[in-house]
View 1 (cartoon, rainbow, N blue to C red):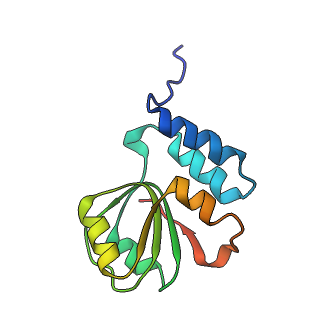
View 2 (view 1 turned 90 degrees about the horizontal axis):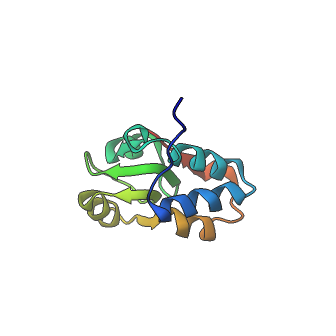
Length: 120
């Protein structure tokens, strides 16, 4: 039997550790998703964020945001990683991008309605 290997990325391991310490269930869910192997982590395209969000929503992606599609309203997107085109399109639409580290600090006491967890 082989034991489960963990990520060699120290920043990712520290982030998962920090997320597990948070009280909100959404952060525990994000930690669980980030603990998966890289090939199983979600990749979310902008067209999907555009389709399932409204202006002013907070979108959390426990993986990478890709730049396929367009965004026609401003949203705040927090993710582990962003492609260059995704960053450009989000900021061009008036949205905001942030790392998951920043999101933990910024959204300490959020109410759940405007926060959405998206996965591929």
